[in-house]
Structure formats: structure tokens, C-alpha cells
Length: 348
Image (tube, rainbow, N blue to C red; front, side, top):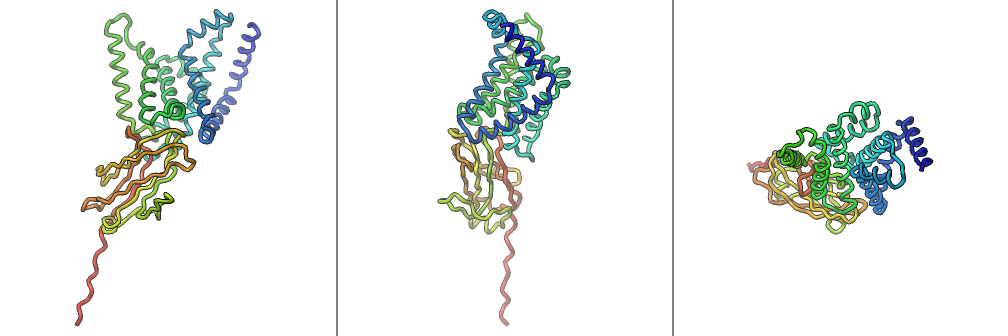
């Protein structure tokens, strides 16, 4: 046991002397995990289980320390524990980051959420910031810890349990809020009867706020591989015709439009998505589509709209969203006025 303790201490010290190397390894490990998840479903589930077990370890932190000390007589050094927690943060954030980068619509509020993940990932690999600025502030550190858990659950739950995007978002919010409870408890005095009700109200308000902002959270498990707008579609081959970005009002009313999308999702995941047809900022139609995960090029689905308003001229958008309102992708087109009719000259 003394030898094991000595080996653990030496490994920790060696890793701490090369923090830059561990940061690089965490980054490439996260990128490799992204491609492995894309191609090997069984391996993806293994990665998900390992990440969840690492978080479970820190949830049961004190209890496990006591049991290990009682059973083996080994005390885990505080430096080793802090460094292991940093590695979990690095691996979790860099594991999730490629999924969010692929799913983010950069001309939308989602860009802010993904940039926040990037900032947290950088903080986790910059030791002076992580250990001197973040770790000593216990409440801020707990929020950082909860955010990392929230982010990784958004990716893991659809892969591991085939939960829909909406179910994964709700579950991740509940888990992150529950984990934040001890940290928020430090903001209120002990021994007061109203402490627990206030904490629950605070968590409820925080969860409700995040749920209202859910459209700004990318659907990490879903990725739009193709989106186009066309007036012809080969339904047998599931291939769209020529993609267009503008159409005149007469052609629009005569032929209508197809909105074609191909969405990549994990194998086994079934998801309801919606095509929202928006005219000059106002939603005029909502069409439901069901997709299934596992197809290499993404599940191909489309909606067709023919009942356009009489005055359809203007700017249009087709938003592809989940049942909970998270944006997957967006397509824009313009309807121009009908071409002027030319009158034939009268015979002399």
C-alpha cells in the first residue's frame, strides 16, 4: 500500500510538472472521442459510461475517501484529487466541444453558448487561472463544475440512453441544479427554517430561466448535414432538385416549395423536429417531421408548403428546431413580386 501511495504521488507530481502536455492530450482525446462516437456506437457508449463514472466519483468524494482509507490504509493526497478533478473538467469539456462546434448556428445566440464552452475549456487548461482564480472561490468553482456536467450530459444522454434532445436538456438541467445545491446553500445562513425553501425556489427560478433560454443551447446530439430549398424533389431517391434562394410570387403560388434537410443523429435515437416557416419575422406554419438516427449521411426529411398567403412578398426563413425549440439550422429565401405582364401591341 505504501508503494501504491508513493506511485500515485509520483505520477501526480510528474503530470503537474507538464500541465501543457496534459492539456494537449485532453484536447486530442476530446477530438478523437468525437470521431469515435461518430463511427463506433459501442465505443461511444463506453466513453459515455467512463465520463459518468468519473463524475460519480466526485459526487461520492468524501465517502469514497473514508472507505479507501479504512480498507487499504491509503490517503489520497489533496493535490492528486485536485489534479484529477481538473482532468475530468478538461476531458468533459474537450469531449463535448466538437459536438457543439458542429451543431452551432454561428449567426444565432447559440454562438454565445459555444463560446462560453470554449472559454471554460481554456480555463481548465491554464493552471494559474484554474488554481489561483477559480478553485479558491468555492461557489464560482461549483458553478463551473455544474456547467461542465451540464454540457457533457447534453452529449452523453442521447448517445447512452437514446433520450430525445428535449428529454436530455431537462435531465441535464435537473442534474446540474441538484449539483449546485450545496454551493448555493453557502449563500444563505445556516439554522434558518426558510433556508431550504429559499434554495429550492432559487434553483427553480434558475432552471426556469435556463429553460426559457433553451433556444440558445445547440442540440449537440443533432447535426445538420444538408439543408436546401427547392421546387422539385425526387421522393424515391430522396434527393432535392436545384437549390434556390429567391422565387417570384407567381411561381411560389403555382408550384409551392420543398424544404429539404438531412440531420445526423446517434443510432437508436428517434426525434421529432419541426420546420417553422416564418414570413417577415412572423411564424405562419409549423410542420412536424420524425427522424431516426444512425444514417451516415443523416436522415433525409422534407416538408412541402403550398398554402402561402396572398401577399407573400418579403423575407422568409425556415427554421429547423427540436420539440423544445432548440435551433438545428436555418434557411433563408426571398419572395419577389410577380413579373409584370407585357401586353401585345394592338393591330393597326
